Image 1 (tube, rainbow, N blue to C red):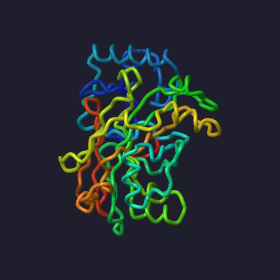
Image 2: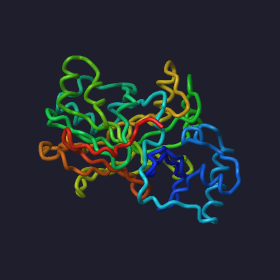
Image 3: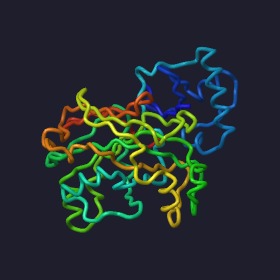
Image 4: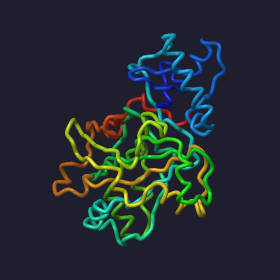
Length: 316
């Protein structure tokens, strides 16, 4: 099932189930069919268990038969879970990407265990949102990533049971200001600023439940800019899988239901290319990251003062 948070002309966030080119407005459909509302948000749906998911699937089928569907066209997809307690990102989780970072003096050590950092929740943006390139940033880069959703409280989780704590997955783009990242690494600090400028965490457009694919470790992730392919990488290239990550960090960190865990950048980002200066993102660029055959997340880069008023509100 594909679960989304969307807005229409009223701008009030709604919870929906995506069915092809249409969306079932869960609350509206349940009311029209005189049924109980199984869940009111994506987070509640993903963290309430199999019974809720089954009820939503049944509702979606009934709504489709009753033609209670809304076209996707004209709707605005917001970050699917606007209020996780944390947005955790795994770093340096691809061998070739490590080599790209090292070549650009953005890797001073070779990690022998999973590493991570935090994306601030206020940086999240939605599908087709605009992201401002600060006027003095010249090396704006893209990092399309697989992002998991934690389905229940995870603390002290073993690798063997880790997947029982994951309820869905989505796309995220860890937009990065490379010159700031390089300076932060050189100063011995983590790259908080480089990763946490406004809009630097596009997420969505919706979340897929885990039954939608047979293996999340075999997804092709792509990035196109202005219709031209920039990279294509497989999630099987991650050095540490989600079970490794959850076991490692949940020893001490408590992950709450609805938390997001992004798995790290693939190789092929702009900074690692010989013509990097031509590839860094500029105002006017249209960027699309995708899971091939599953979904795409679109972002437009704009100059300061040029952003429209239609960007996603981050809080539902």
